[in-house]
Image (cartoon, rainbow, N blue to C red):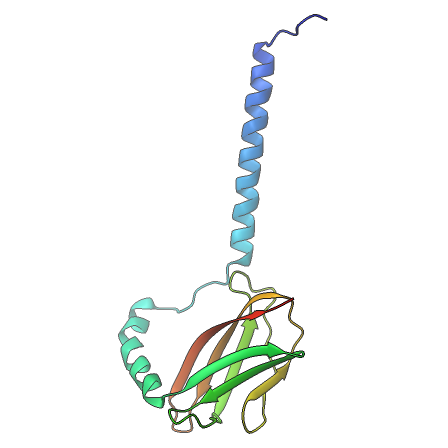
Length: 152
């Protein structure tokens, strides 16, 4: 059997094919990154930085501790004060989702049962974030992001 000769045309085809794959993958990854990017966290980072320490000190003065877990189709979030007693916030809002993309985000319908906030949810196995915004009866804002895992 005769050996095939490697010509300039073959080299050009390999070169063009390799760069087509590289550029195609880069375009696809850039598209996915832009499509799933949630956007800005704050409108003006300078103003947010000026208020950060004041908000943090007020939040820490509340002495709240928050824990979240998933069991039996329920998201269970406990909020306790410095003495370990359950806290019923004046206002509470939360979003549950993945850290890297917003397509799985949803707002759970939490009910306070006297001990914890409970909401039904169907979560797939993996890592989840709960982004909590609550307000104490005196108007102090409490903001926290909690990571929890759902086992398969």
